[in-house]
Figure (spheres, rainbow, N blue to C red):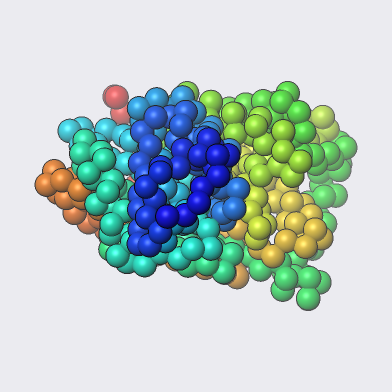
Length: 393
């Protein structure tokens, strides 16, 4: 048995019977204890933005019995942590990454202690025994590697995600002195002159709670009509999503180096664009962006703000600027890196297995459509046409 200090016992609620060899799993369903344990585990771990302790606390802090934290041990040492949210889909109970579709480019919190297939299988069995009410585990939009480490969840059965992430190699920009392309740099100078004709330009990062609310509230206001025009659902619509993001950006202000931040662009004293980011050892990942649809929209204020943030990241020495999940043309114009992601649909009960098979089938169909340019364009046009019709709800 490993000798565990009193401080570790208090912080991590370490059990007394952690085996010195093999794997061992702790399952926490209590929100307070689970988050406290996850925070302590994360001190010596690496993780992506959507598994950051601030993200977990912001999304699961008031989740009550919907919170599920798993700590996987290997040879007496903590090796991996998962912070999940327990959700209901009709008669099926599912555990998934906290944040839903907002949790992108996921990578679990891991330490230097590696896990093999048997360890991962043992962990899933332990979760099923500890929580027989959970029918399935759904872990989507996962990165295959992060900061030079492989994702241990790859050892479980998985499928290719329909979601592709695009990123930009900033080291290449520093070597060539070209940000994006010469054409993009020329356009940026031209747009700056057009914006300056409309008033003073101010680019700033939210450094106070008031500025966070100012930027995020405007983003939400702009988002609603834009997604309605595209014929897609507004993933920022629910109060829980809005409150979780506000908590996240407010909490990050208390960090010496904020892990989540908002940037704003003002022209002539009016806010024109907002970008939201998470930060990792690689650099920035764009969580969302939005712009005001007014007379300056034709100038591309959103792209202008993105260019300025990319330039700042490049000067700071960041390795990567990540545009996040989504294969949009404006991202393609910037990016030189593609990152395939993967999804896990694991049924723990007969009902959960049926749910996992059907959901993974839908995911594969989405991938086929998204990777086919013609099918994707037909779908986008159909959505826009549907949104333009005044149909009863």
